[in-house]
Length: 195
Image (tube, rainbow, N blue to C red; front, top):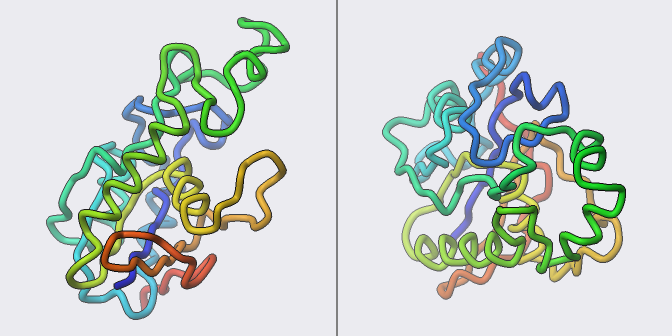
């Protein structure tokens, strides 16, 4: 089966480059207008809808026309702990220029008081395993989850820059085998435009 992962529409904090994490920020007016013009990718018209419980994701799902999506906390953004609400510059000013190095690398990266990247990957894989049998799925989620899905599907070790750029206005489509193991089916699949 296939799963189309769609990032929520833009928020004011996205424009300000603030980490949102678990904070429940709404879509901006621009984000609402953008998502209201779109639909899930071709071939996912009858897919099972899932959504992060965060407001920005729920608003996006509604604007995309996804009716009664199943809310699943495993689709929520990574918890960035004490760094939530801050820009990168503010994090470094508060916690020192070596703050990111001290937070760890790769799967060991853990923002102060937050969730490790490894923990995020575990819950995303758990979600994949649970939905792997049955009809295709469309899921509205967050950038951290899309990156985790890309890592799980490709084996990218995160030690170098990401080999492919994820278009935040498109879908990441994966194929899942019966165990939930993902593979890339289509990178940056366009969302359909409303007519």
